[in-house]
Length: 310
Image (cartoon, rainbow, N blue to C red; front, side, top):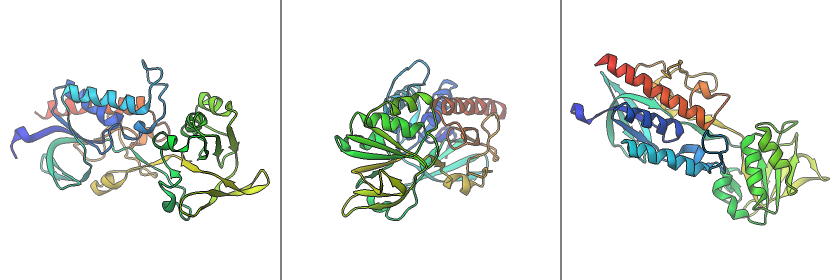
């Protein structure tokens, strides 16, 4: 493969971290290619983003597309495919897509994000798309004037409850903790709604229904019953890092599977950086602004790295 066909940076992931990496790379005049199945990553599922500087109120998908369009305008090549394997070959890295296409790059930024956690109870997979969802933004309108539940107590759960309160007839937040956590502003908004009910120190032990979800069984009674009839249930209990590629590469991971990086976003293997929710930096604070920051830092360091190497 000729030098002209080798990218300076290959970015795995098209969420805020990956797209910000691309914007900075293009402005450094580094050729870059971005791989990702979902534009915007998990932020595209957010009902609202209210804390991104300069944009007081915007949907996650709209913010994702703004960043995506900027990356395109700056000159990125964007491929709507995932990467299944990365092979180090001398001074370059060969990337193989899910469909078997091959690309080469001098460096790689892993911005692979996270995957939604599941309840891990019987019949969970049976009801996916049949009353059970992991994306309230995607599926909320299916439950207009119906009764829904949300599992979780974080900002994601209270944000979902606030949105669903305007669509559904009744909304139940079911959380195992003693009190809701996350941003106080979202907690205040959710709990101020007359049709939002909070069930604390409770977990779901069973999902029941014929062709679709009809009721859930609770670990302790609520209103004198251990069953709660629902038309829909949304799971908002956090996420785990995507570990496939990092594990195949043999990168150093922390105890939770996040990629260990230094202050410049470098991983344990030369030529590979990581940014965003998949890194140990983001372990306790996953925000669009921090993901964008890590992506920018990674591209800046690669610019200095390639300049020194040339």
